[in-house]
Every structure is written in structure tokens, then in C-alpha cells.
Length: 375
Image 1 (cartoon, helix red, strand yellow):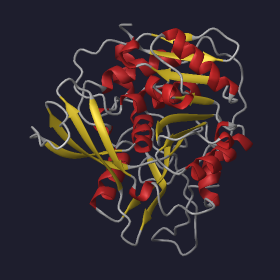
Image 2 (cartoon, rainbow, N blue to C red):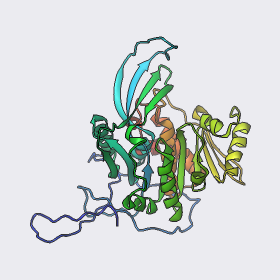
Image 3 (cartoon, rainbow, N blue to C red):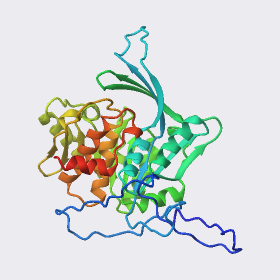
Image 4 (cartoon, one colour):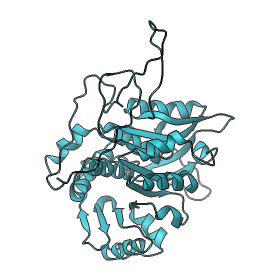
């Protein structure tokens, strides 16, 4: 069983095994714990798997029965600069402020799962630098299990990104892959694949090599674990070998248009583009539409639409899509209906855009449920 370590207590000479569940809330002792609300539309009994356990220093007597959310993906340091507008070619513009925060699509989604009080594991790579420490500390403080994070030696830097945040809350991003795109083993370690096989759901993105995603998706498929594949990241065709193992493909409308080569200006356009994805073998396409909401296209069924939940003020859209995808995954693995999953994700994304930064803006479960009480 993965995540269990042998360590002798100070007063004993023989090895003992101490089992502990992965913490489902942040390390803040004053945080209120919320049980997942149950869907009245999903009463079918599901086949359950033995939980994966993660050794931690708190609450050693409790074992969490829920199969975890496992996120395999990128970890970045996001270098934020606030500007009035993007510079033109050859132009220099001043930045109002600048700061460095933890991010990366994979780390964002893992942090969201942890902050929503669901047991979450992150599988990824960082360098031996200050950026790596920044990201791992942010994930740890968000309640994410880091037993499967590898620190790469030899001078390979942690991935990082320059986020140009404009006054209207929109952003443009330049990404340096670093440890996210290099030094992965040709064959992933068995203990990493085991945590995937024992997951409740797996999240992937396109900021790590396709070869890694393919191995993970195949391992999940072999164990009957659903895979949500976020299309954000590399601008290249998705290998069919990967699509064959994806249960839900989740692009935004721009990514959907780029992947399919089809227009996405109207809902009818988006529906036709989603239908093209169905022809690739992906049965469900979850499209993020920004201020227009979201839609889930299930092959052979009517689309399920969810309007955006109004945000009082949009400060930063960075991480909103990752928040939506991860919140949807949490709701799905908890057994909620697809409509409830969309609404839960919309509420989480609405809260995200009201705070600057990616991981710092991820909402906790209490805030999401409180917002849902009004919608």
C-alpha cells in the first residue's frame, strides 16, 4: 500500500507501522470542517476501493475512507506584473506592481481540491530552487499530499510563468517549462502509478509531456478510474492514444476552437466542435465559457448548460479555469449529478476571480457552499 512508511518510535527497537489518513482540511486549527453534501439524484451504490493513506503528523488515528483526487501535472512559480495594457512590439511599459506566487495548472487544480476539503494527491516535479520551495509550501499549506512530488537536481529550474495582468482582470501568460517538461523518467515509478490506480478521479493537463499523461491515463483506465483532461497548455494536437483513455475532455472555448479547427463564436458552433471531439472517442466534453458559463456535452444526450455565477468584482481570472475543473472533479467524485457538479464548479470559479493570484484565490468549501445558498 502506498503512502505508508516504516519508522520506529523512539522508545521501541522494532519497526511499527503507523497509519494515518491524508488531512482533508488546511492546517488552520480554527477551520470548520464541512461534510460533502449528497446528491439526491445519485443513489446508486458504487464499487468502492481501499483508500490510499498518506503519512502526516496530525490526527494519526483517523483514516479517510474517500478515494483521493489525484492530480498529475505542472507546478510553476507565477511572476505577476500588473499593467494597464499589453506592450506593442518594441515598446516598454511600466508595471504597477510585481510579485511571485505559486501556480501552474497542475498545482492549481491540486490546491483547489485540497482547499475544498477533499483528499488530494499531487504528482509532479520541481527544481532545487526557491521557486520549488514556494510551490511545495503553498500546496502543503493547502492540505495537498506531496509524497509523489519529485525534486530534480542538476540545475533544472522549477517551471515558472510571467503573468501580465491587465486592469480589466484579463491576463496574458508566458510559460517556461523547466522541471515540468524535462527529466521525467521514461517509465513512471510504480508507486506513482499505484496512487493513480487507487484514485477516485484523476486530473491531467497539457503542461507536462504527452508521454507522461499517456502512461497515467492508461493506468487509470486499467483500474476503472475516470480521467478528466484539461486541454490547457501545449498548442499541439492531442495524441489519439491519450484521447482513448480520457473520460472528460475539458477545454475553454478558445482551446476547443484551436483543437478542432472549428469556429466557437456561438453555442451552436461550440456544440458542433464538441461533436467533433466525440468522433475522436471522447464521450464527454466539458467546455468552460468564461462569463458565459459552461456546458457539458455528453454524446447522445442534450447538453447541460450552466450560467456563470455573478462575481462582485473581477480582479484576476488567472486560475479560474483550473478552479472550475478541479471543483467539478471534486463534486463528481463525491457523487453529485452532472448539473450539480457544474453549479458547484461555477460557484468556485466565481469566488476565484475575486482574488489576485492562482493558488491564493482558490476558495474553501465553506465559501462555495455559502455562495450556493444564494443561487
